[in-house]
Length: 140
Image 1 (cartoon, rainbow, N blue to C red):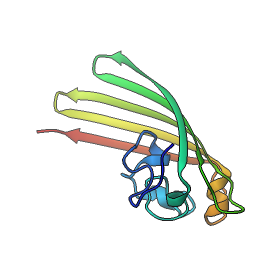
Image 2: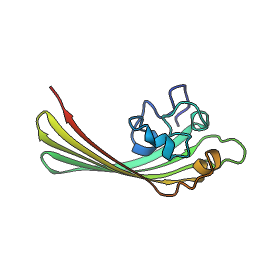
Image 3: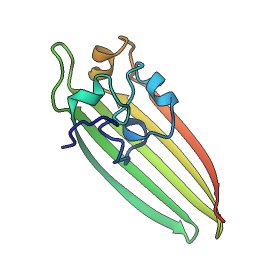
Image 4: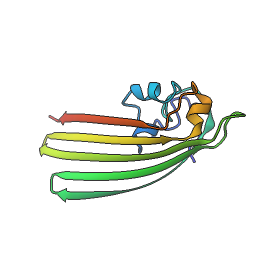
């Protein structure tokens, strides 16, 4: 059970990409304009959240790790007329270590949005919410 605070209730705990990530500013716009659990303010900042998740990580090769994660989230409390379901999220994370100091990362995330986004946001239907993320990291 995570209680809200000024920086967003998921800001210091970023397990799932769509629901709790703060690296992609476009997520707020894709979620009815009210942001995700890491967005300060808005309805998600005052509802609190219960997030249940499970995942598995495998290393099919020495330099590649693959993680699959499933999460379900609901609000602790919502205003009248707002459903408490944030929804189900499914994430796939790939990290490939090209060299000792160079890593390629890929994330594919899908949020089967609950009714909370529609009830508390702009009224948009958020049934299909996909996010893709690519990153090449070089360390010195």
